[in-house]
Image 1 (cartoon, helix red, strand yellow):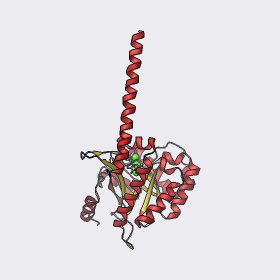
Image 2 (image 1 turned 180 degrees about the vertical axis):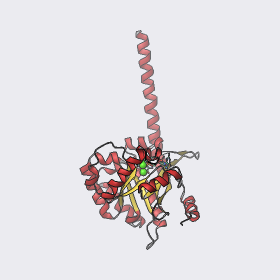
Image 3 (image 1 turned 135 degrees about the horizontal axis):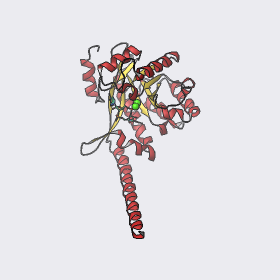
Length: 279
Ligand code: C2E
Ligand code: CA
Ligand code: CA
Ligand code: CA
């Protein structure tokens, strides 16, 4: 029994070692991937249900490895967040999205908005404000064309500190959206204390949406809340025409999902907009 226990322990130990080593390799790879320019952004269209036009995009990061493999955020963002690498990676994402959006927004044209995801770690501390200011100045992007998506869980934690940061960001002229809205299970009271522009209803409520079912009731309640607080309502994960119709009927302002378009390159986006019925 003793030998077994020792053997099992040794095996467990070796297992941890392998995992730790793999994480270290991945961390080093993310670092070198950043310096080699291996990260790319795809842009997923957002459709206004009022005008029927694509009026903006969400920037979503991908890691293009030397072998051409495209790695999804879920396979590297958690570690990037844990190791703090999300700071340089997030700074790159912001700069690249603003650079691209500046090309889409020549002076004087109506805003074609770009939404950038801000990680919980980025949200903490004053350096985000300086980073955003510097990036806007460098790229020349009109602040009104930039939207920052912050997750509900990040906002609930540290609500007071976050509120100060969001207020200063909004003073710059950009907008703030609460991502994954409805998944926090917390009291909704925080929403009224925060300087916000938009609630983005989580995909989980859109998935099972049918006329008059429970998801429809939740979305209707969110829309009512948003109207009263003068917030725009967006919905993500819209995969079917039926879901889009139902969201329109419930009073949503903006929809995003595979039904409108997948995350795509700027070139593919230009083609989609050119072929769009309301373009
Ligand atoms: P998210 O912010 O909720 O982004 C939406 C995710 O849903 C994206 O996954 C998108 O490709 C996917 N999606 C869009 N439409 C549909 C649909 O109709 N059906 C389904 N099933 N999925 C849809 P993606 O690109 O893999 O990103 C996953 C998450 O990674 C994002 O969730 C976001 O939290 C995070 N993320 C992505 N890019 C960045 C980034 O640049 N910075 C930070 N901090 N986080 C990012
Ligand atoms: Ca998002
Ligand atoms: Ca989301
Ligand atoms: Ca989500």
